[in-house]
Amino acid sequence: MNQHRNTFVLFIIILLNGCLSNQMLPNELSDYRATIISSRLPQKIGALTLLQAKSDANNISLIFTKSKFVDMDSLVKQVAIEFCEKEETRYLLKRGISYRIITLYSSNKVDSLNSISLNTCINDE
Image (tube, rainbow, N blue to C red; front, side, top):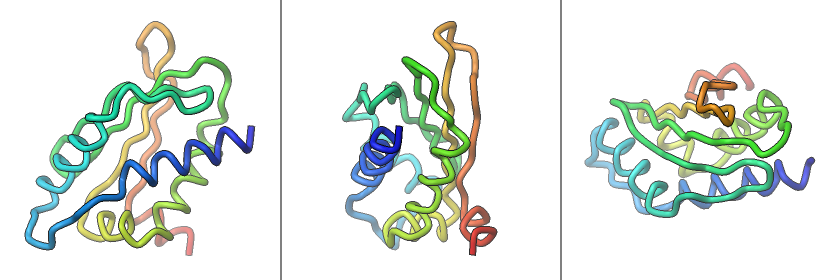
């Protein structure tokens, strides 16, 4: 399970790396990041498949399906730590961008919804 979690964390970090402009507004940054991530989908990451990335104002929603049980709360905590520690994602969080990690049941109903924001980083310090 840790290997899948580590693979997921690394994949998300790789997806989120890229050129950023200090001139972009937060909603433009979130749209840009969602577009970059979407260009590489679908992406299987262990028991999860990232199906969609979309932006809404300053939020980036990452929508996954699961092929088997994954402790999403634990996984998102690990991803949040990585987001807070990595310079590029921390920059996005400081600019007001937040992430919603949504997992769906096979029936496309929401299984779990987790958020990562700068507040998440501050609470973990």
